[in-house]
Length: 229
Image (cartoon, rainbow, N blue to C red; front, side):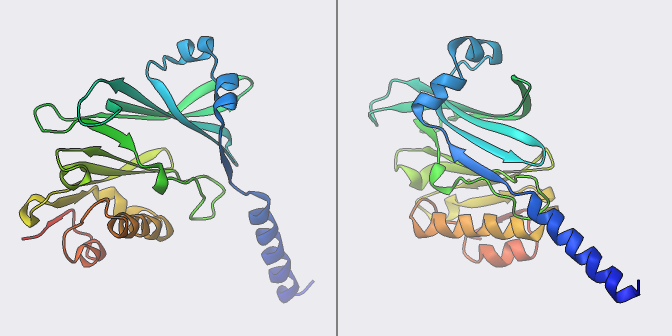
């Protein structure tokens, strides 16, 4: 067997192996949520907030559930307000839930914020770097006196069980807006970084936020904080 034949066979093998691992995901219906996350299960997992949404996904590590929960409170500004959120990712195997990662956040006291919510419009579960493992990107934000315009937003990226965060403060005036980027974000695979930048572009296009002028170049230069100054 000559070298060319061996190389071709290795390429076919690698392509075949890559094709065997495909990340799939779906959003559960209310009925499915109630069937999977029964009251006893919620008590065992200590899910003390109301379940907002649940996503099931499968990758080469197995079946997972991403559970988004919110804490309902009374407020005058909106019909419904939430003062805090908790999101969980569980690996499900042998009828057992094992916590993979968890995040929680809340409105800031005395900061004129009155609600926090997931921005599921920008949420999806995909394998961006084609390693057979899902790369969840979670987006959520707060609402202030001027709705989105003076609230905060965060973009959370989970890669290899490690979290990277982009934090942004919206503002009516230029000098009120700034963005902070975790240094480890720039170590992520370029495909994931590109997806995050697309999300930031979509947030701008949908009037859900205004990032500082020239933020694309700031991120290209791996800046950790940028504003309008």
